[in-house]
Image (cartoon, rainbow, N blue to C red; front, side, top):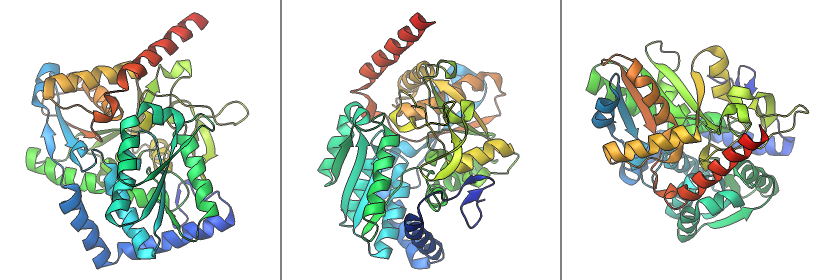
Length: 404
């Protein structure tokens, strides 16, 4: 859908220094060659099958469907991937590209830690040096993932700059790439950033919707009526949507983190209240103040806590190719518990945002309607920190109530 300059309509592009643009143009050129190289594609497919464990199942959540009434809710089980999330699809693809280019130093950013773990995993597999940048707040919320990255041999650099979150981690990773471009490959974890990253991440994550399409035809002899995915930067969502973009049979719905409510200002929903702007070298909808400064974002889910969104999502929203809405912390936590109790599946709190929306619309739809929720990750990482995150969310809510 993007043009040769990485533009999706007016969104995307490369708003970066010329020196960095040369580096990324080289990566983009190698990526285009790799897509046409049968040996590269065969190696990628080998690792997806024999290392990641693909294809991931499509599971009918029959208990949840019965409790809610109405539409059938299917789960695309990306939580069953090696490392526990969809992130490994992309990190393996980009690591193979780095290997193809002869680059042995890998850097990455991470929010909830799943992309960091997946990057460290790929680096260990291919004998590469790995540095992962992570905001201090996120590291404190996800200590298990910090330990996992370090066990895998990565150096985890924790930053206390900015809002100590995913945006801060991306800032530092991009700065590292500028300084060390000769020997470094930046594995960016979401469908964001300057060209060619949004297209590259979509390509490696599109395996999700390719499998989903075949599996749904096997189950229902039709395409899904709805595909729903959570959206921070938007990698799991663009992977889940890819095969269905422009297909009028399937409604695509992206769920942004509404935090304490979009109206409170404590959220990470740039499509709900953002303006067109530039963040991390590309144009998209961004949470901006009256002076066009980037506002701090908030979500109980570290992996969704980002003040921008992938450029293709901005384009799809404006072009009417997908609908985007938001789910609050409280709604996501409710869905998190219900799926655990009804199906014995503990979802990532990020994925629970998408599930919550599916649960809200299922009772209003007919029983022959099929909803697929992309269950982008598992919730092990959230168990230790969820009580503290809930307490913090409640504290903020009380603070807002007093201010009002």
